[in-house]
Length: 255
Image (cartoon, rainbow, N blue to C red):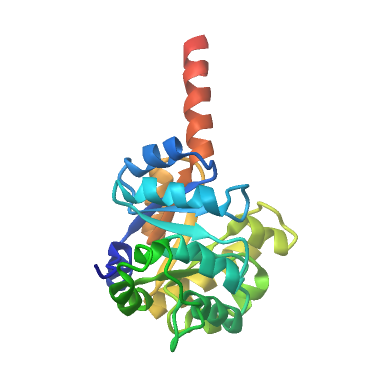
């Protein structure tokens, strides 16, 4: 069976893609999140202790309920990218991409020759080789590659980054971006507003996915992002969902 990415189709049409984020490497968490109705769910391997064995279990659990699964890799490393894709991920989110050259490196790592340099194997992604021909023929076209913009250098280079062929979009990281400017979490600072506007303008003009993470699980906040032009939105995190709902229940009871 050939790979057909519903998220990729939405990106091509400029439609809204709603996702979420997993930081707890437990199958039950992944399956509960997968049943919520998200278009995609990202497994975070940059800021967690999730390993490749756990990743394969999470991928199987999530995909069984329909969402596509992406992985935020630990860095822009072709070996790390190759391994998560061989596990069966439908795409990657690559942290700290600061130039067109770095964006191109991520794309090439995600694609088989002649378009890229991804090593060929008969792993889980191709049903251990049983579906290799169809997988190999379609995956370069259907893989989703997203670059994280989380440094002022990336903002300066955004036109070069977003113009890279095969890059599907960017994911704005406000916390790290503000940190790189020496104004940590000051999202209303003029420098941050200017940077955000520059990124939005370049990405939307290029017709690619404009992503961001709304950490607080509030529908109105997500709606505001949609109205602003973002169309690849991560809605909170598994840990925040658990923490927020638990605290609210206890507070409501005590009141």
